[in-house]
Length: 154
Length: 154
DNA sequence: TTTCATGTAATCATATATGTTACGTGATGG
DNA sequence: CCATCACGTAACATATATGATTACATGAAA
Image (tube, rainbow over the protein chains, first blue to last red):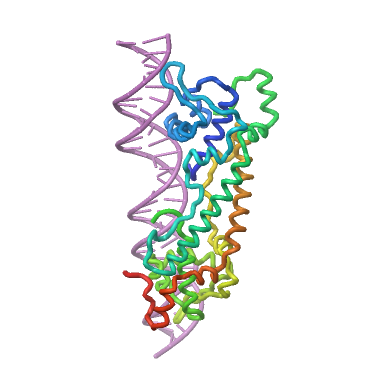
């Protein structure tokens, strides 16, 4: 339990979902992939649902489904949907009386805005399809051999 | 008390120091500028001292001094000296057995490395002199009138 | 109408950052 | 030589953030 692993979790789960495309998967299943709690999945995926990346249905046979092809979802999309801070820069005081501190805050605001823009551009160049293509070849062999989801050792 | 305000604090204090150049200033004085505790200043400035940006001397008349001209210190220098994480992206698991998660980790590592590079380049273009130049003109008037450091209202 | 699955609030646990206290070390001045 | 000053640092306290867990409401399907 450390520092903002929501993007990591979301990517991991989304890629697993892609392998079971068009099947509604429950929060419990997704949670077991990410070794976390179903409620954590629902919270994390709420943003993705609002962004139209995944859909959810209730009741029998319900669960989560991917709504877009892998090459139509960028890491920037996911990051934005999760609404995370991304940058760990804070200000000592929000509206200081000191003129020096105001100048510092203004400069940092500018730098952070620029950094966000650069980061977003960087993340928007990577799609889920790119990540799927980089999954080790050993997995393909296992899949071909008909093994049932040997995802984690637990 | 929020999130990683060390860069903010460091910049604020360094700019105040620049106004009293060549005078050794105690941690207590710097702390009163940043409205914090002297020990926090010592901790924060330890990295700056190791990086050769400031120096510290003990005993009577001791304290902290700026060792470089304002235009020879970039925000990237300070950020690196503070050794902060900067990016709030973490991984769910450090060395996962799941191939999918490994691919995610690898991709995120690459993206974070690239982002760090971009950020560093962005911060290395701003010097303390640039910040000093952007301090509001009202302050100059007060300085000229001989007012003694009306930095904060406390 | 019972069961299943999401939606969400509330609470707990833990990690990180900052604030504070206490004490050690070295340098200066008397 | 020793009292004082200021940094160096460990130890502890507090605040915030994130994730885990519990509990319950809502809606859909068998």
